[in-house]
Length: 138
Image (tube, rainbow, N blue to C red):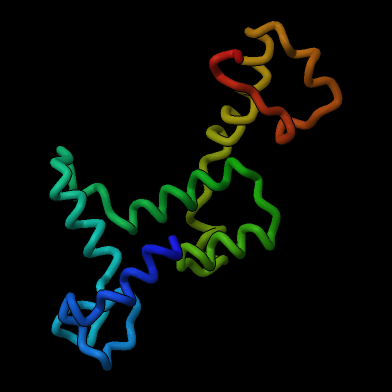
């Protein structure tokens, strides 16, 4: 990654980025920056996705926030994730929660999979959060 970052800096002039543009992801012939959301939107259109409008940074952040509830993050971990996603942690806690049934299903499916694989006794003494099961039984 460092090599790529150094290449961006080394080739700024060649790409037409003004010397006084302070942004790392600078736009050619401008004193502004590239916007990640615009780049994602463009790639979503260019890749030929059937419903490219559903591939957005906002929807990705919401998906990550919602699915993170399965991880049972501690308070400071949730604060860190919310900050990284650009969310206020209070909003994150209120709006990005999976329904209780979804969380229960995700956790209890581990027990059912272990039973199906005949390995339930392997997890004696562990909590549902500690149990790790390969769905392919490997």
